[in-house]
Image 1: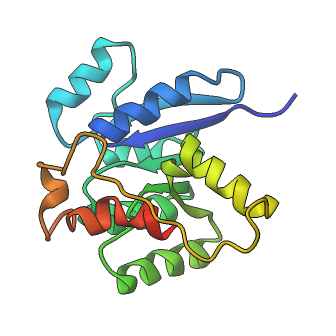
Image 2 (image 1 turned 180 degrees about the vertical axis):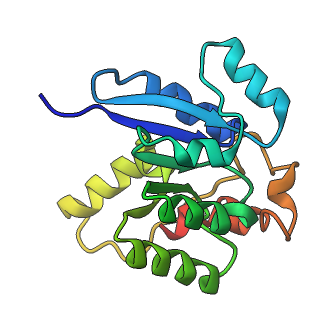
Amino acid sequence: MSKVVRVAVVGYGGMGGWHTKRLQEIPGVVELAGVYDIKPERNEAAEAVGIHAYASFEELLADKTVDIVTVAIPNDQHEPVCIRALEAGKLVISEKPVTMSTASLERMIAAANRTGSVFTVHQNRRWDEDFRIAKQIYESKQLGRVFAIESRVHGSRGIPGDWRNTKAQGGGMVLEWGVHMLD
């Protein structure tokens, strides 16, 4: 019998909540170890629905039973959180966009290489039906040689209006949805 992989989620907002729900849907394979958010009310919300909330990020990192840390916080905070998790011996999944600059990404990759851990980015749109169908058509060559694909996205709820549309934290639509188009 293989080991159940334990995952902790940093950030219990929109995507953090999404990750916790998905993790709870595959028992026997993965187990949600808990969440940590800098906002106490989000930790309380997690506890209210039976999800363990770590008292601090340090407590989460110190939990030897946690195998993977998923980082679902504002984009400008990914680098320090991911690096600390890698240095704590955890495998790390970062929400997209992974960071705000290539220099930051290179430091994150260097930390993964230095620690011998795994670091990757969650690109959730890869599993959307339209993306999967376009990929299938392209790979099957049903249409011959495909030289361009046009896709339009205006966000899941329109143009983001929270931290995602600020240059310092999110980068606006180019980083929020543009990374999916580039991917």
